[in-house]
Length: 343
Image (tube, rainbow, N blue to C red; front, top):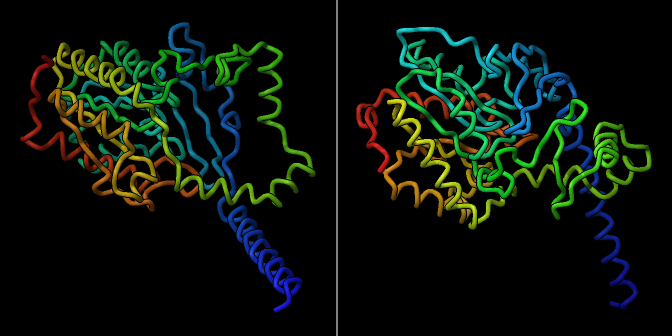
């Protein structure tokens, strides 16, 4: 075969492959549109906090259109996504965590805490203190502020990005600026000016011009974004394992002081679930907290990739139900009814 003909066939094969990927890109964009920006539908949800950057505005009520569900979000008078706490004969448990605990992408009735209550027919009353974007430093501070809570068990819903650098900061490198949640610094530690923040916000909420949208389609940007959900690694750092363990131990110490059993619920990423194991930093964290006698619940044993949102890394309603069942089983199991005191 002549070299020129061979090159032509290679070029035609490459073009055919690209056109096929382009069609797949259009299909992915149609069936799995990217979620709207976080600001959409959440106006007024956040309120500034000097210590931890921001919290939720008490008594806020609204809806967030994620593109696949129009989720109702209700914040009670204490600033948590739950009903008002009440005295009850049910066994009361406290849920600590980030957006997974909060229930991003879930309607109010689909969150982990509500499914715990539903699956136990009200025998367990679960209280949700989940805060989007929070790491163990912020979660510990949220727990400290719950001195009013009296119950039997505390569950820290750990996710792999709890070992990220920003997760070790009490404010998670975030603040509120003109009603938007923003990072305080870039990856190099540069503190954003007000002008820079306005520019970043403007770009984030603006509809991209026609050229940018066409360029995004031609470069298969959405297809790459969608596939990245399956390859996503939380990128937790090994250097953050010991601080993460220390924060977890302090949560246990505080729970013990308040006469409650403490548990860690290790929720894997979609990638971890697909592979059947955790990344190295999470494995190191798990080994160390077990060595310290902490009780760990691992839903990775029952979760599948179908239990996560197709357009996001959070669990869907079915996945939240499986996590809820694992927690409910731990509460009712006699083998975990009492936990050893912190050393």
